[in-house]
Image (cartoon, rainbow, N blue to C red; front, side):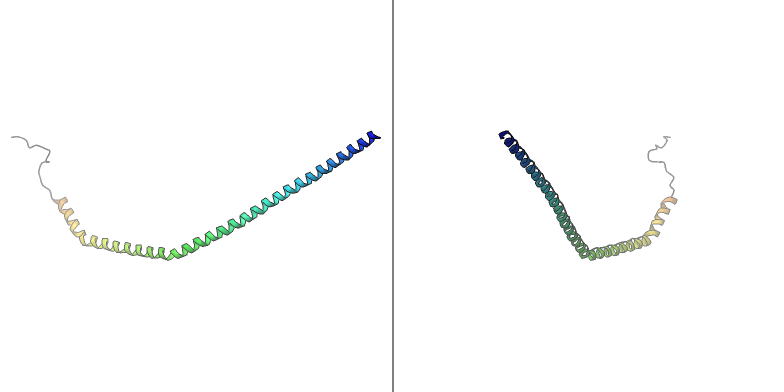
Length: 125
């Protein structure tokens, strides 16, 4: 009987170990699920924070852009006005001096002087 008792105790011990192993496996599985859920939650939270930060920066940029939009249009208007003034000035200078310049050019082209080039020597007679 002692052999049967020992065998029963060993069987009981093995059964207890198997149950403990099953319980441990369940605990490990629950821990994995808990970890996965925590990762999903963390990702979702990070995504919300990123979206909030992105929206805040976009609002900040829009505010900056709208506050400087007037400055840009004023600067462009000033540049356009200065360009027109310069063009008017250049056109006036052209109209004022064109006749004089054309006359000087024609006088130079029409003026013919018969003389040897300075690099040529006159023949010795």
